[in-house]
Image (tube, rainbow, N blue to C red; front, side, top):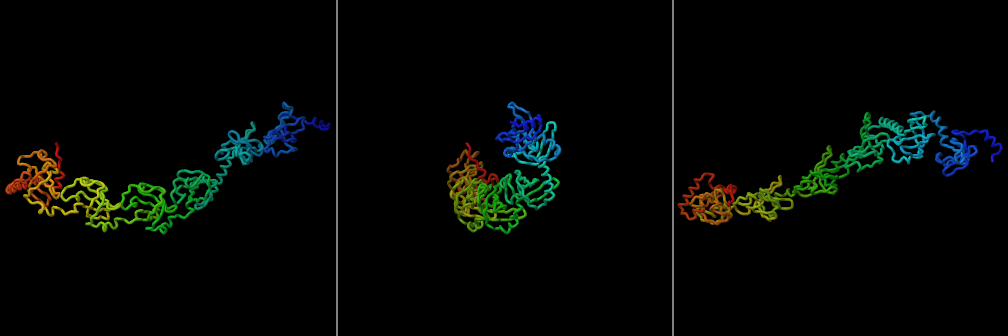
Length: 553
């Protein structure tokens, strides 16, 4: 019960709604605080109205705002928060106008931003929290910052704050200070802010600089992410500064010595090296011989004997290989390498091993229209030209005599080391039968052979010793022959008489109708042949073969 004295005091004291009074904390509960203001009933204040409920103690004196003298339970409705707001509002207005700064503590994260306690509650939009909007606003609750007052609405009694403007202002001041203080060659600490295909943007604590991919390493880099990650801290070298455009070029490879400065002494020409294939291109392979140093093996330097179309046919990316340094251009930072130099060039002693006149054996590796390629040893071929297949017969295509895989014996005719060519011949294995033609055939001899080819002007007859004779159309029959195919067939055996031998033109003239002629008749026929026009004469065999026509039905 109230004492008489307390009752008198209470009667002297008036309480009204919206009045600020001093209350005494009489109980602290988990979710509310019970406060006595000297009224006939106590009031309850939610714990959420206090910055930290743990700091509230029984007996504490606090300012409270009377919202209503009684609620439905007969208790006075109080607010500590509104009392503080009302008490602080005028103070806030006097110490802080729009554009001023104030310290506050982030009280809660709400939709669209944060509630900040600056003595009264103020609103901080999410877009004004930082230069980039934080993903987790809840993580800022309880932190104290400086804020700029953006807007004050006295009628609604609300305040809008910005932290971003202060940060940007601070960064601008820092940026100007850094630009004025920074000089090329400085080493600065920075943090990787962003990665692109061409480089990385580095935050230098107030200003961004570009670290180009070419200034990251003396060696090859496919992408900046091969070396850097966003958020990584590192030391960078200032390469160039454009103060007007506020652009800074940075580098990190400049912190290390350029390996190309000592390249000529470290890898003199002729040095055998080991390296890793880092890039394959149509014309060769780039090989890393040490960090920051690559050499090129051109496709022409991969093999002494094989024709390699592209490097990827024989090499793989990541493969470890050996090579020989062929040349260095320090100015252009280029090194020429060779793989074939690890082995002896078979062409170096080809003229000794395959001297002209040497008899060789090999398999037919390839056939072309002009000859056959014979493999003499791994990667070393010789060629038999069609003209060196037979002394007596014209070969139009080597497939008439050879096929791939055939084992062939031949004679070395010539070695051209400069152009890496070896000429071979098959006919040279035997003597030219025309050298002793007088011993083999004489005018007047009767010979037997088979028709091998038909031409409009006559027929070719295969004789012994692989020599062909030509029967002119006028020498087939006593009767006039309009078309030779009407009287002779390929493969048909015929008997004829030798009526002419021309050593210079390497040709033998035959006559079927003169097989039974007397010597006088033969002389007469010879005179007829000698009188023929050039186009009708017995042409040299190599030209006659070109005009051969297969008999037609």
